[in-house]
Length: 497
Image 1 (cartoon, rainbow, N blue to C red):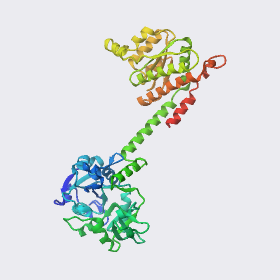
Image 2: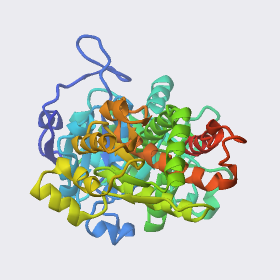
Image 3: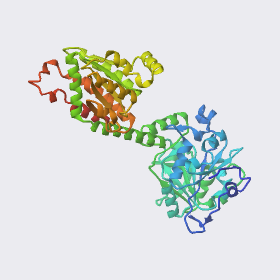
């Protein structure tokens, strides 16, 4: 797809775009093969936007952001979604901002023709300047300072069904004196068009111009060329005096004119606080839903009986006065630090012995020294070799379950008579096979695996707090009853869901 510049009708618009002209049958455009040709559209974006200053000191008004996306992009995407492919945009102030952002339009599914106006031509004059471009059949005109969700194809369908020369989308105005309002007969035909009426002319239940039209190319023959012309002031009232020419479609679709900074803020808040979603918001919401669903699935995959055995391993170490060493790399290193802090705090808050628990991932000087002098695969084994005793527990975090320095630490632990609690994902890996107790998260995504590892840390620390020493008598309480993780896991799953 390509874009071309066009200056006030100095060159034939059809030639300027390089687009093949479509035949004109009065109400629909068809190619020589008989297939329907997609309607074209014009977006009126040349206004100076003086009421939107200071924003329009550096932006054309059609580029002000709505929910983080330029207003003009919202309009183009609405048209493309409706089947439009060829779009003309008239530009004036800060024209380069629009052209630089949209380019030839191919990134947005459109083919864009820019019509630069050194002097503003008005709404009707701008369309008249591109008359050959619209020779193929009914086409859309959209005001560039309007945010709308009105369905363009519904308007096109009504236009063709009515057989009108012009069909205007109508909305209920907030302030009718600032709009073009209409009078209609019982069939929907507009009998009078009043641009910015006095309060006494408004009447009850007014309907106003929504800034979205369908025009038959024949209308352009009645518009004077070369000078400023306006649809509301110069064209529509004259058409309304002709019988069954100007039709109005009353709509309840969302539509706001961005006429001031205050109105821009109101519309931005309204769009962001509803499900009127721009493409970015849809993508974010989809990513959020998918990720939370992945985490809930990972939680549901946990082996509750293995969690009980993991808690028992920690209780036994505390009972013996043995030490617990926690290791992990990267994100798992932060979980190792977190676990050491939580377990020490939990045992300090309950009756009985404290738990000698520390993370071997915390001392940056030691880690970097061993990594530099010997090799990163030895950063945990060289620390453990100095302190590990029979009966101690090594808690190893590895999302993949195969980190070399983790597996080296597991081998050393077993050679010293220590036990290993392994927490992994991605099917478990060698860590799950070699650990005395393995907690495997059923996910192949690092984010959910590490999230659930942190959940398991909190769960085990909570078990230490909730099971007082008075319940440690194995003759009165079965070992399998020491900790029951279901309640904690179900609470988390419900919150995430």
